[in-house]
Image (cartoon, rainbow, N blue to C red; front, side, top):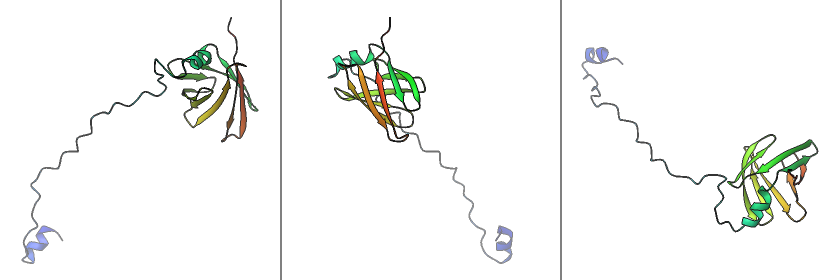
Length: 132
């Protein structure tokens, strides 16, 4: 009912809200997050990192062949995506793509790696290429 109808019936008009609207909550202060892809200067896998980043690698699947290059700052650049990576063990690297992680097993002595993409259901193999 409107205030005029309430007054006509002898009822008191509803109280008007005289309080100003509440101010929006103060957003929390920015919290520093660790940078994805960062590799500590003294890593337990320093030797493996040097081998991984020395030259680009091929990336072969049943869909074709492409390239991936790993950088010492933890970034990687593939023909089709940019991402980050981290060592899980001395021979296992996790590549973080935008859509999912890929686990790659390296044999640095042979300069080869293998992996499996569970989404596309295909094997991934690669070899380190030599730059002149």
